Image 1 (cartoon, rainbow over the protein chains, first blue to last red):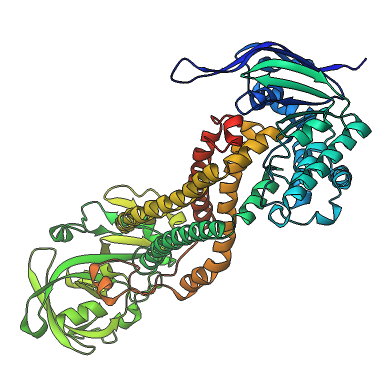
Image 2: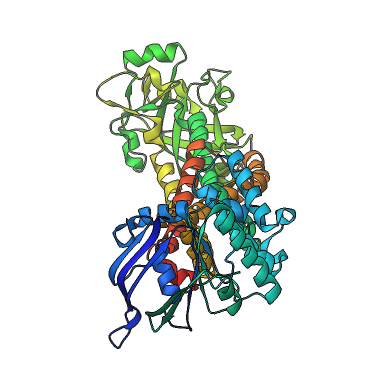
Length: 232
Length: 392
């Protein structure tokens, strides 16, 4: 049986507002096991991004308990959560968030610099990641020289280069056309199948939902459905 | 890693980086040049005063007060035996001061008569002209400075009458001839001064081997002599000039502070703009696993690198300026030499000591690092989730 990678027990998240606070997540519980290719779906404002931020240790729940890779995220110091992200968690953003002054190679290399990996090892890992996403020929290009689909593939390579246990992808296809969306979904699915990396998506894109093997639906911060499906 | 990222970011910032580096370079060049100018002036003044007036320091009679002309009539004493040996070996020179009056073109002009041995070679005053060829001559050869000659309207060869008070209180007079007009850069050896042979002044004042000051060739030769002689080191002699240069320097500091402020604003502005413009980048770096401390370090390093690159630009573009003013010098207007300021009679060559360069560099560096750290410390309070959304 696969190990539980993320354990969420009865968490709530309230954002302070002038009128007593906005309830973004309401007593939500969820377990995610190693190797899943799953998504959190729901309309805007349903709490998808908030949940991903908490799992990614970028934010903290107001109440309840979250364990990521066996660690209570709200008990981690800022340095410890940074270390967890640097070593075990990859992020893919809707707007790619590539650093414009760096080349494709340097953008992908960045997480390895944070891990203080040796130059030769870094080079091997970066080339491997660029091969996964089919962009070795663009390694010297800058982000503004890439198409949207290529930019998102660089973002996937950057998330995958350190071979993390968990990849969090927040609306990764929102800015892409159908062809590019399918391309990057194929890429991520292949990585999931080949090396077993766990992917958690937040999306309301039906193309993405088709690919998912598990779909958790949120509405107004509450889990209303948790379905397993065959996926593509 | 931080250094590499900071360097990349600076390159990526393009023109904004160049402008910052240029401003920092301008500030550094300005500060080093101005400090070099004051240090150069101070050195020239010290050298000239040593060469023309104080050499390695001097013994002064305890009653002598250079600001009180009445003290001249009582501030002399016989050369002490301890110093006579130094005088005999050419390691010291006695000078006798006396108040006097000359009458150029029939006008009464008070002067300080200074008796100095004609054969001395410790001071650059061309005393060989004071040698008296004919012991029975009634016309005494004297030396004066260029400014003095100009002010009393005399030329070489002119003969005029000089009057002084003997030690017993009687007034005496002699005719003097201007045998040489010297170009001395030290106003206190020029304006209101008449130089005459030491022995002759002793003789006409009815004294014997008495003097008011004894100038040493080397300060190392100084020894305790006791009353009525006080040793005045070259540093003590330089106090007035040093204080005057220091006053000028303080005026210059206002300019430094403005320059520093300019540099600080440039870096602060660039980094502040960067913090706002690069919020998303900061959020991404946090998501990738960078700690807040590393992010502050990154921005501070960028500021520091601006400074380092500014120094490289200073070294490249400022060097010709530094060399020009170091070798060619900064010409001082003629009027300045009328202000009784030593060192103002020749072009001031800037002097750049390693300590001055290093301290200037450190000050600008500290200001730059602070100006870079200040906006980046705001990042420490930024939530990663907000940063990713481009909020602060």
